[in-house]
Image 1 (cartoon, rainbow, N blue to C red):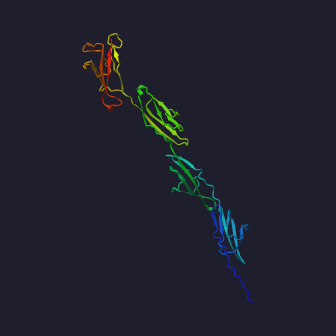
Image 2: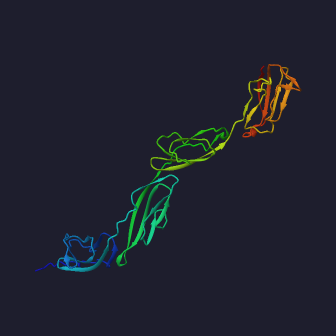
Image 3: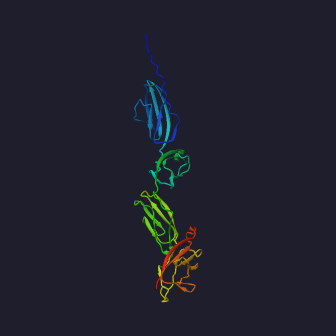
Length: 330
């Protein structure tokens, strides 16, 4: 009689070296290559309720683990000591918003043994000026000589600055007590703050030279400052009366030219009779005409005059001439 004998292979149980890791879970693998094997898993001497066909299990707690692998009457055992250090909860916080031209600091928080950002920087804090996704890997020392690796990513979005055009310079004639309006644009949805003065309107009225700064903010809080330089700039002013009466009554007896914002240099006032003959001339802005020429009194009629002058604020214009006529009245 022939008897058949079935020879089973010797099962393999090899859990590897003891583990001391920072992880919430870890997989234990018996490394048994044979099918139709059965497995018994134990933790700290107590059998685990797992499928008997499971050659691998995932664990989430420390302990002494044993696996028994059976093929028929053949079996193998292996033991591994596992220390699991749960990684700390870690976050860079919510996504950020950054105003154009501003700098945002991203802080990976203290306590790390090392830091590595996706920008290549290896410091706890980095400065960010551009939009994008920023991630960091932090190695944090824990108990039992374990170092935990944690990582997080934060999104940075770039916000626009106020879209305005502000003229950098304006002018007024301060000696004339002139006022001008300074404008910070036409957007009614922005917030405005003027300095000096601490006014919160879109426009202000000023009557002094100087530098005025307006801070313009969007609803997202992005602020841009613009400086407006107000300079003193006056147009020449020349006034010649239409008539005067040199009759000796003490009222309006002389013709006086009233001038502002012109230089004494190049000033000249001339009066002509009806035939174009020069009958009065002066380069003194304060000198007046009494209606005579070389002791001669002129009859009531209209006389032409010219004023030559140079602007004190616009000397580059050169010598200019203003013309008119004046009536000698009785």
